[in-house]
Length: 338
Image (tube, rainbow, N blue to C red; front, side, top):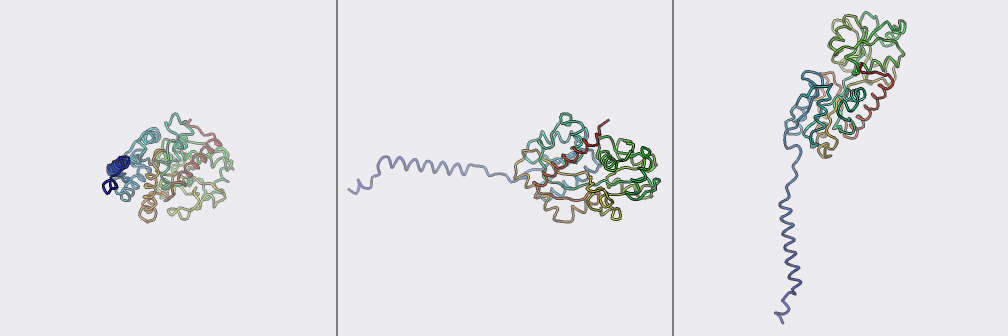
């Protein structure tokens, strides 16, 4: 009886054997599954879409060093200049969406490029192909005038320009640039008749402003600051919501009666749209930690850049807002590349 009692039915034996086999299989499967590598596990490339030495390159190198320290991996800057920054953006669009290829993006310029050249020409769709990891800073523009105009404030400049329609000229760094778009937005808002004189870059435009060949221009803060000594040009107003630390005595254009008139070159780090969420958050987390300390902010301010931090949701919203703002400016002012 005992022998019969202790014997297991055949189905039970088969069930036990199967369970053991299944358990071993599951155990082996769990053991064999590779652990997910923590991002980043290798160096990251930051594409700077312009040549070395310019504002975008300088800011990109500052960020690359700082982010590398936060992430525990080297962030290598690769300059990929050409086609007004479009070549670099195309490279990031084509790269694997794994967070190892980033774009140091002057988003305002990209919006204008896309609107004026067309998406087929620039080779990407800013909103469909990219996602913003975070806004890192803004480079405000300053309205400067030749001292020969005899003006120091916005009301004085507007009054002078209205008194002689079509006799005053403004310079820009070229057709379709931020400086051109801002000046046309200003001209339209104030109902001024001004002649546009485009140059191949901000430097030659500033040379002629200093010489009085043109009477005014919107220049990025670093360009304006570098040319104020000597007194041949005067800062009339800053196109930002707050005064600049580097120009504390120069009021904003808003303060001088131009409501909501702001214009900056917005800098952001972009990645391919399909980059995994944990990777995007890891990159944004590095920016957040950098923003909590003074070191990065001080380095950016030395370049005339106003430090900014946004979480990923606000970063994407900011990118959409830039597209809407500058597309509407182009539509309203009818600026072209010609």
